[in-house]
Length: 372
Image (tube, rainbow, N blue to C red; front, side):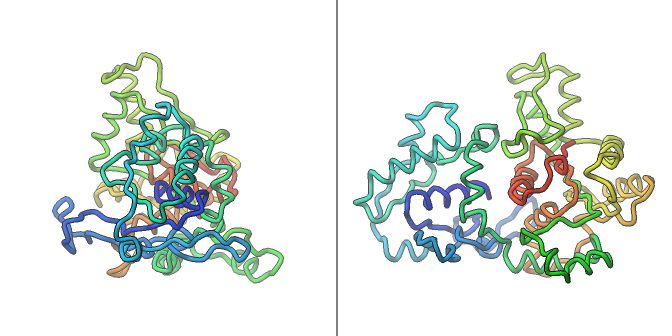
């Protein structure tokens, strides 16, 4: 999602229409794709996930920026676009170029091509904003301008995502009498469309094949994702001394696994520690975002219920989604995490990074964003 938003931010800066495609798993023309033995849609329209200028919604009235258009329209009005390689600047910029540097270089390049009405970046060439930027602190310098742009100020989740959230709100964290009262008072209206839900602690816990991914991260001394490394956020991580390149010590690997693939005992210990913090005062509901097996989730729930003061512990397996919503369940989880009073996320995860980016954009306190 970050790449989509950044690319539209680039088009906005360059004064060009952004062209958005479907979220595509498979381009072979099939309607469904086999993913780990299950059929999933080969394509999901981005408008099923988000709203805002990135997917063609209008900019604010005072901003006459060109509107984003769907790829089908682009293909119709631009049958012979100017196709350029994503490598055209990737090979000239420094290997450690920041996101802001990349943005400015591409804006300049596109302005050089103002005589070309339609420009397309060649598929399977280098991304404009690479995974190495999103996976490092080099992404952070673009944020001050990005967060104030209409790309972010006008960002909304789709009606499909919002309706799934509202339908499941009573399961996750039912509004209290005080919540309802404050919502009715005009001088207590939130400044963000997605205000914090008091009392809700959200845990993002990857399982399954992430165990191998975490071991891989340890071998290569990886750092947190970029937006999980905002200055001022607690629980930061730096590769420990003694790390190698392609190998690591058993002690360091164990530390990576605790931060990336924690055990039930480590999760409960972290939750207890976070609940003792000022930002976590009043937490009473826990939501577990996870792809873990039911038996493992049940074990974790029981361990969390053993802590005093929790009223309900629910998970991704408990929320009710209709046949459309189940294919965008991760976006539903992101909205839940975005609105939590406190989030404990996986610093190595891009999904956690998406949520933290939105929470920082919402102005939530830095110490409400925690990591294993």
